[in-house]
Structures are given as C-alpha cells and as structure tokens.
Amino acid sequence: MHQTSPNGTRHAPPPAGASGGPSGADHANVVKMVSENPVIVVGARGCCMCHVVQKLLQGQGVNPPVYEVDEGDQADLARELSRNIIGGSDDNSGETMQFPAVFVGGKFFGGLERLMATHISGELVPILKDAGALWL
Image (cartoon, rainbow, N blue to C red):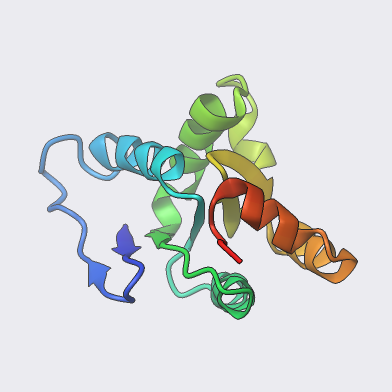
C-alpha cells in the first residue's frame, strides 16, 4: 500500500514483516486518515479511475490525499472501512465497497459515478464546503 500525501509525494508501505503488516496497522491508519481529512480517496495502485477522481476534485479546488492499495489487500481494506466507517457487518461488507472510494467529512461518499453525478447536478461544491474541504 502506498499513500500519496497532499503535495503528491508517495510513501512506501512498511516491510511485510513490520508491525501489523498491510492488513493490520495500515488498515487502521486508513480509517484514521478518513476521520482526519475532509476528503480522501482510496483506490487501487495505478488505477486510472482513481486518477480521474483526484483530477475532478482538484478541479473543484480540493487536493485530496490518495491512499493506494495493492490488489491483494483490497478486499481486506474494504471490509475494514465498511466495518469502521459505514458500519457494515463482517459477512458481506467487503462486497459493497469498490475502489476508488471517496470519503467526505469522515463518511463514505461513493465512487466515481456518484462523484460525477453530484458534480454534474451542482451539489458537489456545497457538500465539499460543508465538509471543510473548500473555504470559498
């Protein structure tokens, strides 16, 4: 897993044997990042749709951090986010969240389709303002 900071730099994941590994401490860090950032994007590493989400938000004046997930860690992270952010059950929560996933105001907002639909309808900017991502 890699994390892209707001200034565009990427941070390498800890070694596989480090405390918690990709499925432990890193997942908790993502949940913490969601709660601490007005907008955050979680997506698969190298996913072009994640890039589209990021560019759409940047076009609105928001520079969201992007947390990139390895393909093998996607299901585990989706379950963790669903359990801790959405409040889903352990049984099927990983099936409902797909990446890229956008979180606004500490809550799951949706994916690319919802983001684009909200933008087209003119509702995105007020939502971003309410979350504290825009000050204009």
